[in-house]
Image (cartoon, rainbow, N blue to C red; front, side, top):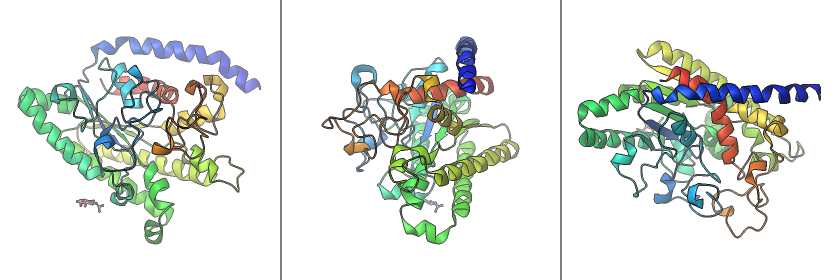
Length: 354
Ligand SMILES: *[C@@H]1O[C@H](CO)[C@@H](O)[C@H](O)[C@H]1NC(C)=O
């Protein structure tokens, strides 16, 4: 109780400090935000590919500007949108495959992410989504279009000054390793983590070779606390699955070591690590600090297993106020959670990448 009181006293000062740090951002030299990864950051690329993993229908997007279901797996915006806004760029990062946008829009921000993907090719194959090597192919295509649009010199300047955001890994564990026997028969969980970290390093080296210099790598959230994983944790009385949380922490630790190695290895690069685990864990363990009332189930429908088409507008149980929930569907945070994750990270991001 004393702990909680102490936190309540300090929180307003944290907010004030964050607000002050946001002030000088108009001087930022980051001209574009370029996003790779999975549903944690997908802005709608899955809308136009033949997969069952989509979210371009209600109630997704109900708190998005205009109430539009863009294909973001959220009631509103996802973290890259908030990061872009904090850099004084546009408040929404468009999906590269969305035909409503052109290279003029993508010049200040573009998203190549695909819900359901992972570092492992076998993960993207589960739901027939875009594998990471293909996200990189789309990025090369984007580079060519940007050079044709702005001229080689201006385009290259944007590509090297841009901030690159990578966010994925969850699906490699929860959609692949723990669901299908193939990877489990080939790798222990420690070996699989190392395999994924190797792929993450290769992806960043490829990006670097293509001109990227400012990179932020996001780790995985507390996987065992996602509502779907609580639902299946019958032995643990539907609490967080601690085994999965331990895997998350271990994997994030290995990613942080990778980040340290890459900063030494690649000349002129800055790679930062974004620890979404710690902020989401804090929201789950101290929800009242943030005005949350529900952490164990999601807002959409019963909040226990509904994702994608199972979370739809014909479900009468969907909550009225998503701001009281940490999770929007059984796998994805609410917009409010996304905003707080970015709030916790943006100061160090703005300091490291200008
Ligand atoms: C993933 O697939 C691509 C395309 O087939 C291939 O080039 C790449 O080597 C594969 N990655 C791994 C780790 O097998």
